[in-house]
Structures are given as structure tokens and as C-alpha cells.
Image (tube, rainbow, N blue to C red; front, side, top):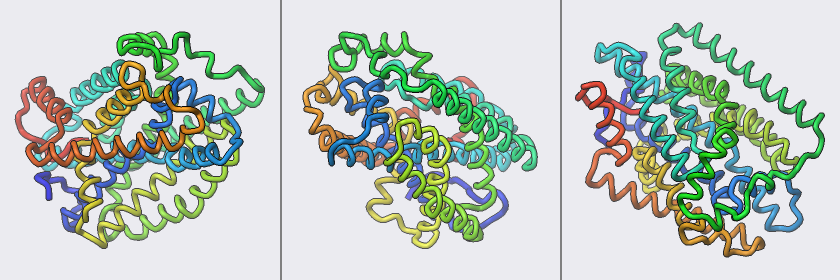
Length: 403
């Protein structure tokens, strides 16, 4: 199915490589499409991020608003968590590959992190203010060095970062409770509206001028991201993708689907906008781990991908390219510098319009990934990233995987 020679069994396991490869690529594909499931509501709002945040704190008044709230909650935080864990797994795979090849770790990884940060910076300025790549670049650089420590030290760092994250959540929750009702987030949108009325360059300047506001979440979730990166690496080494990891997968699914998912759905749908702190940053990562365990279990039992699995795996193999492309396509469709569709649809048609845009974007990136991989071994951004890395380091050996 694929040219990649990823080895998920760093502890000597011999479970079939194609099974593990399918699960990893499918999970990456799911994470990419799932993050779009959250971001699409930002892209289709005529006021962008400010309008999206306003609607999070608005109580539903009709069937369409209830539908929107449910659809948003199904994606909220879960696939951000899944993508974060998958990056950690990717780091563990790269480290294992370096060890097998007798290469030092982290070796040239800081250059990879720098290139990912540059990709994220360009994506942030030119396409999407909710970019995650810059944050992942910083997190990956930190975790790459933490992975040189022993398992015990890694767990201590993981728990410390989790404690810092919980402390930050608590402080923000207290601040929100004591502050009382504040001004609408919509006040941050200037007039004329750069999303609906501005040019491409107007939006670039708007993102640059408000960089600290737009980058606040990436800074806030840095401790959580470090913890999830480390957790992904530890789960990988613990055999979550191997046949002998069945008990681990059952525990993850029980905690995620049996406990966290009902809490997440009820709190997100019936609670106010402030409960996003609970759902997105505390509960949703447990659901993400359950999704990971479910997909791993599925492909251990069913080693062939099938049509849907192949399409998801193709998106997963071109994940970086597809992540940037999906935001670009949606921006062209929705923003004023493109077709400007977001401002043309009445608020009552927002839900079917958003679902339609989401499906169109999925079809576009799915076709792109399929057609591109018929001729090339990796996505265009992945190829440029790898070629730049080789030029910077003088390394011309193709690594087993990329994170």
C-alpha cells in the first residue's frame, strides 16, 4: 500500500507492518478532517473568529441553532487532541528510526521544528489565524529533548505539565466567574470587516496586528500539548498499536467513550460558552484517546483499509499539505477576497451552508491527496519540508517517517 517503512514495534514486536501503517495514516487523516470540523464554523462566519466566539456563548433559540451546537460539540477539541497525540507518536517513531540507524537523537530535529514553525507562520499570516503548526513546532522541539530521558522522567514531566495545565484552567475559570458578564467578543472585529469586505492583504495585516490575540490559545495550551506529545510517545512504546496492547485500548475506550464523551456532549450542548474550558481542554482529549484506540483495534482486526480507509490514509500521508489546503479552499469560498459566500447566506441558512462547505472541502482535499499520491511519494509541502531539511543539514538519506 505504501512505500514507508515505519516500524511501530520499538520493543521488538513483530505485528504486521501494513496493519500499523494503515492505522497511523487513517488516524492522521481523521485528525485533519476533524480539525476542519471545528474550524469550518470560524471560516463560514462572516465575522470570523469573533463571530464564532460570540455564537459559542449564545443560547440556542431554534432547531438550526441546536443542530449547530451539537455538530460543533462533536468535533470540539477531540481532533485537536488526536492531532496532538499523533504528533507525539510521530516523534517517537522518528526517535526509534534514528536509534535503529545509529544516528544521534534529537540530531537534526531542531531544523525540522524550525521549518514546521516557518510553515505555521506562513499559514497563520496568509491563510488561517487558528494555525496549530507553530505551537506544534515549539512543543515538538521541547519534547524531542525530553524523549532522551528515561520513561520515569518522561512521566514526571508529563504529570508536571498536566498539573500546570489544570492550574491554568482553574485560574481562568476563577477569573471568568469573578468577572461576571463581559463585553461581546464581536467588538474585536473592526469596520470594515476584513473577512467579508477586505482584500487578501487586508486579512494578512489584520492577523499580523492581532497576532498576540490569535496566538493566545497556542501559548495557553503549551503545557497540555507537551503532556499529550509525551503521552502519545508513551502509548506508542506501550504497544497501543500492537496486538498485545488490547487491554490498554479497552481502558482508553472505556474512559473516553464510556465516561468522557457523555460529559463532553452534555456540558457542551446544554452548558454555556464558558464550559468550553471544561470540554475542549479537559474532557475532549480523553475522547481523542478513545478514537485512537478504536481505530488501532479496528485495523488490527481488519488489516485491509477498504475504500474509506484508503481515502483517509491518503489524506494522512499528505497531512501537512491537506491541513493547509483545506483552510485555503474554505477561505477562497467564504472570505470576501474570494467568492465571499459567508456574507451572502442568511443566518437561518448557516448550518446547511456550513455543512455544504465542509463536504466540498473534504471532496477537494480527498481528490487532491488521491491524485497527487498516484504520481508522487509525499505531499508537496512534505516534499518541500524534506528537501529544505536535507539542504540545511546535508542529510540525503530519506528517513523512515515524518512526524
